[in-house]
Image 1 (cartoon, rainbow, N blue to C red):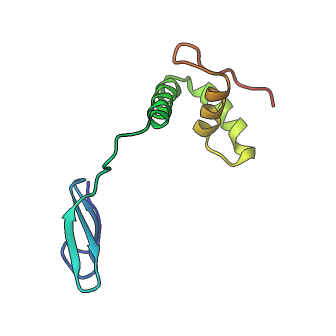
Image 2 (image 1 turned 90 degrees about the horizontal axis):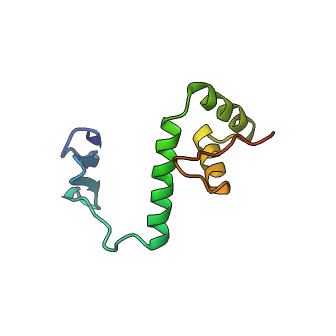
Length: 106
């Protein structure tokens, strides 16, 4: 899906089209180029974090709506999202998809 502001190739155009083409403003005119990609593979720490986030999101998606409501009640006073609170406890309790985190006491 395109995230381009203003008509494509107009003076005010900027954004990315189809995750391939990036349009941005240079000093003289809009420039279209291939979207930049990372040149280095992710580090071990990044790969571990991505795997944990993926496992936590699978577990979160499988939660019953009542349980999600309980996590939302815990997250509200702290001004964070329910999933952020869930993931914080996920890491603290060293959870897995088979053993999701317990709802902590208030």
